[in-house]
Image (cartoon, rainbow, N blue to C red):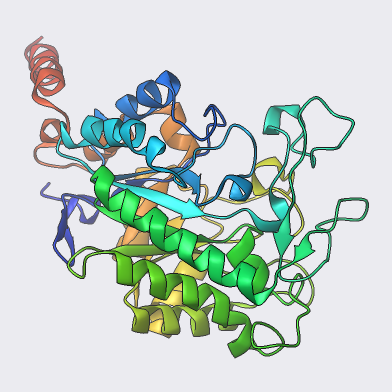
Length: 373
């Protein structure tokens, strides 16, 4: 009995997290012109009542062309602020911290919804495609449209878009932002030698391939208050021959820490197609070793994610110092009260305190009745 590590607090600059459980960003593909809809409010209300410490709003485009699909959320204009502000209010009302993941889809933009196949939109389709951009004119897969290779001016404009998006996130009231540098999207595509074949200051050597992601991070940090934390999501390895290695990612994480990134969120893959549609057989916690390697190699805080389902496993990840935070996505869709069930399973001495009082009162009373029966 006592307080498990999973329910110990964590300070990230001025942000106090009541436990180590995070709701990972999950694209819902239900936005209209980048604006969140009623679906998003219902979706986030489930997690706000579940007892986690922090939740992230899904990957949100810093430009209209930077969305993955027409259904993706946006933060490229002030008209997105009211809806996002409402999501912030939902979480804050329950004492939860809330962040937003900002990104640009790059060559993986202009795609159909996942349940419509996630293939690139075509000119003869129902929805018109838009121009994709990337470090080099290399398509994601054979038969896919090639992105337009970005000019120096394009790069500066995207850096500025990230800065403006960060300022809007602050206006919305978010506690943190996460820069999306994973899953084959724009920042990842600059970092990976698979998609970046440039021979200028943005490509070639490992250091030059870091340049654009680091410029974006520097702009985000400059636009975000110094007493508030920043997360950065990486694809720690490409899982493709000739792609990013864990040593490359440790080097990147070392530079990110110097720029003021507080937590590296360790995912993987995405260079050969959408990770959400992958049919590869995976094991529980398959990405945890990446988190451990980055945490030790870069001497930085990390967040583990990827098929972390069992509370005992989550507790062991923290006990073994493989991560500082544990993020769940699809398991939260299955069980939005995962934190409460974890508290029970791990022998927390006050498991009901994890939940809001209206839930805690009735569940504790039921337990007492059953105990006395």
